Length: 300
Length: 275
Image 1 (cartoon, each protein chain N blue to C red):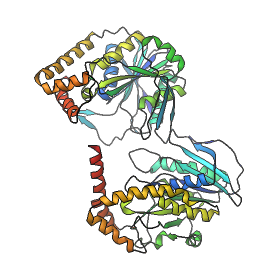
Image 2 (tube, helix red, strand yellow):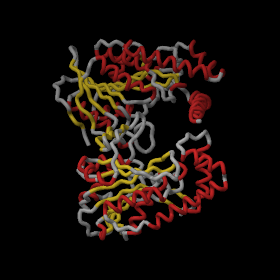
Image 3 (tube, each protein chain N blue to C red):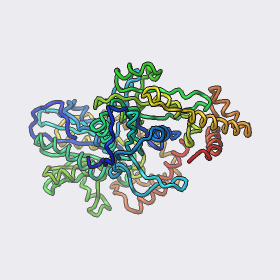
Image 4 (tube, each protein chain N blue to C red):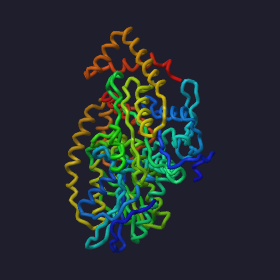
């Protein structure tokens, strides 16, 4: 088990940006968009077999040709002002019926990604993911940030449209980041890397549905581009955002009046906060039931 | 090889290996492998330890019988055959499948592998069980060309789907240069939770020919005949069931609820066949 290299570029203290699927697929959409915009080239990949079940078998004329696994690939780009490494994981390592990776497999995967970061003497690691917030889907997503070291916080506070997780109303200075987008930054700290996790806000009532939320990715991409000093066209995600706005609006119209009214009140909120236990229970009672009913109806 | 425990040292000379998974449609995998072990006097000689591959959070009980995950190799030295029967692993598939190949290749020096697989079919039980194979090498395809096994199938798993464990295993065997074939037999959907002797008769007929096992399969012909008779009785007693099966026999689509009704009624009538 290890990393297969496809090329050996010479990179100078690159920054590494990492993304896996997660809530709203915010992290992976961000990293994929960045990869496309800067036209990053493939560097290598993590051998998949110990982490994933295959997702495709290819048979030709009755003969099994190959099976394919979810990709875990590295890319690189030498820019004028800095070098960049990217990692895109198509799936979080599965097993034991968990939605998000945890335990031994996740730790192994995180370490393999960081082995590559170490090999190229990376300056800093960025991960991105979702921040579940009491916001409204018509609001522009803000970006919450955490860092591996106190000394980075001042810099992070200076990013546009970004706030520290502790600044979010109701957080009580506590929080957690689920899955590999979170775990990686923890392992990065353990191994002595500087690291920052940037999380795009997604409304709580959309956090449990299997929709991408590209509006949040757009916000994270904007912040990342500024940090890295690269020009990106965030409107490249506009089509996806528009498409999802239509889907969300359609679903939203079907919410019960009481639920919709409560959510609509948030339009007035200037400072959306994180979710409290009471809010989480309310979502579980109302929104999850709604989507379960929708699924049941589709199944019949 | 701490995940593997040997309990015997059978004398085998580049044997063939048949692989069957329990809990597949029509119980095909376990019925075929049970039959081979029983008729050919197979002796267990090795097993894969379940820790790391199965939840082991308790046991499953079916009809008052305890089921615990088992992954056993049996040797039938007289017919130069290895049979592997196992519960499908719940995780660590790559490691698990490699362990099977470690025993097959490194210890038994297996020359070819046949994986038993069933497909849920929308056809009637009165249709022949025309099985087919997917092969992992062109050489093996040529060798099996006399058995009407291969079809010129092109297939790719659709997005969101997952390949079967048999396909995964066949690919791993290919990587380790072990020739092999997946044998697929259609099992009518209303026999999926019962069993389908005609389906495993069809597979065993092929294995008997190919591996020169000298099996007398008359008992399976009789089982299939008795099962058909039982279903005929249901058809005679329940015109609705007869009408639904007739639709299947004529290749017509079923209306909503008809499939469920058929599976329920036929399943009930065949329950006395179950162990």
